[in-house]
Amino acid sequence: MIEKARSDVTEFIEWDVRNWSTALDFWRQHSRLEISKCSALELGSRNGGLSLWMALQGAQVVSSDIDLPTEEAARLHQARGVSHLVQYEAIDATNIPYSSTFDVIVFKSMLGAVGRLGGKQRQVHAVRQMHKALKNGGELFFAENLIGSAAHHFLRRNFVRWGKSWRYVSISEMKEFLSPFSSVEYRPLGFGGAFGRSELQRNLLGILDGLVFNHIVPDDWKYIIVGVARK
Image 1 (cartoon, one colour):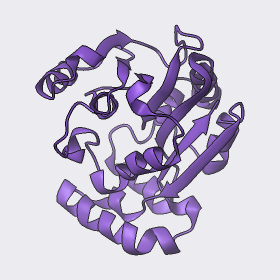
Image 2 (image 1 turned 90 degrees about the vertical axis):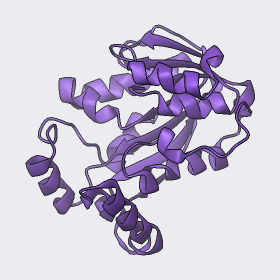
Image 3 (image 1 turned 30 degrees about the vertical axis):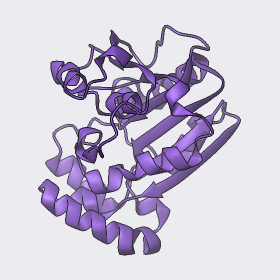
Image 4 (image 1 turned 120 degrees about the vertical axis):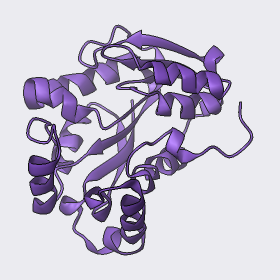
C-alpha cells in the first residue's frame, strides 16, 4: 500500500460522504481480489477519487472520463504520491476500447448520465461493455443513484440542475443490467442524506440513515445501490 496514514474519505467521495463511502467498505468486504496486484479502470472519474482509492492500495489504474478526468485529478494523485500508478484516458463507457484487460472496473454515480443521452438501452450497453473489458474472474465495483422515494423524485426535479434529464435506475433494472455476470452482491442504502443542503447536514442525516433509516425504510425508497459483480 502506497500511503500508510489514514486517508480522508472525502478525497474518494465528494458528496454525501457518510452514505456513499459505504461502498468502499462493501467492496473490500465482498471482493475476492488482492487489490495491490490488480489492474483497474475507473469510469466517469471526474476528479479521480476512486482512482486514488485504488492506487493507494497499490493497483495500476486507468483513470477515465468521457472527456478525460479534470486537472484536479492529476493534482490530487500527484499530491498523494500515486501518479506513477495512474494514467489518464478519455473513455466513453458505451464504447470501452478494451477486452478482457482489467481485474477491476469501478464507477460511482455514472449510469444516470449514460441514460440521459440514450435511455435504458444505453445503460444496458454500458454495463455489457464493462463486462467485456474485465478479465474472467474480474470484478465490477459499482455505486449508483437509485430512483428512491417520491420525495427524492420531487427534490431532484425541482432543486437539482440535471434532475429532470438524469435517468435514475431501479433495483430491478440494476439486476437486469448485471445479468451477464456470474454473481452479484449488492446493498441498497441511504435515505435522508440526499435531503441535506450542505455537507454538514448530509453528514448528520447520513448518521441517521446508518442508525435508523437503512433499517426501517423499504429498499425501493433508498437512493443508493452499492455492489460487486463478478465475471
